Image 1 (cartoon, rainbow, N blue to C red):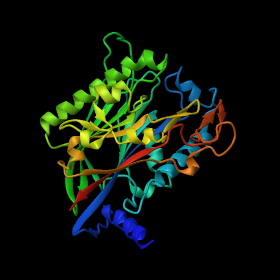
Image 2 (tube, rainbow, N blue to C red):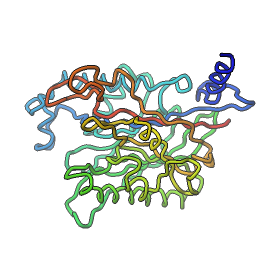
Image 3 (cartoon, rainbow, N blue to C red):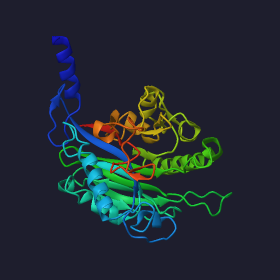
Image 4 (cartoon, rainbow, N blue to C red):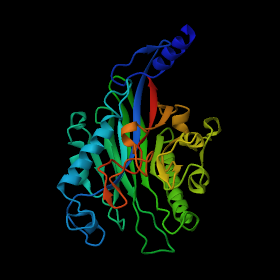
Length: 352
């Protein structure tokens, strides 16, 4: 029993708070959370673009009114507020998000009671997506400072009218005055869906992965020591060609090549842990992938742990979809849930 208690204490001391770092093995270590959350159709109630937006309006099929909208805002803000740990008491330093209609819904989200005291800031860009959904980044200015934002459009020459979400690249400094700062780039993604079939649409996600790899290569050419985090709803699992081959994100951390990527969520899926469920089978589309400069600590931050935030309150507790993520609508009926995806998070440590 004493041995187990000592092991547990040692594990806790390895990762320390970004605000109150403690001494562990004669070192001070700070911890920063990096999260991603697909917010599942976070639309306002105003019909701005007709065909697709009508669904999410009071006159539409979902009868999307103020009551439902604000309930979803409060639900999502509560879910984010629970993404705290003893070592990250103010939540993640950055949170990538997808399936958001505009900057207004993000403003409502960060100002909701559950998280407004965190003072989260927003990076947003209107994508050309046909459904009108975008990606974005929420960040805590206490732990992250934005230096540059660039958005990349996915061009498909064979489909000149194809419209999807842009890939958002945010370069910034992670850290505090006490810990020092590390330059990182966060690429937020929402790759093309599997509409039409997984195999039939895979080439679109492979094209998205190719754009991602190109962005990463350009970043490393300009900043050789930069830490790169690519995150998002990939609409593919870690072992699919887009992620494992085109992007080249490996399952085993020791196999990470210089300039390459490591995907800590591959092993999670191997253990049956997922972030999205389809016909009773778990997928892990919501991934946070790190480059070799984070694996070996070259950028000043080092990968420590990855988790799927599968907390009980986010899960349907009864009925036909027991065990599924508790979503906003199910079978066209408002279930007053959170999202059909679960949040994911990684933790980075920095020796100070």
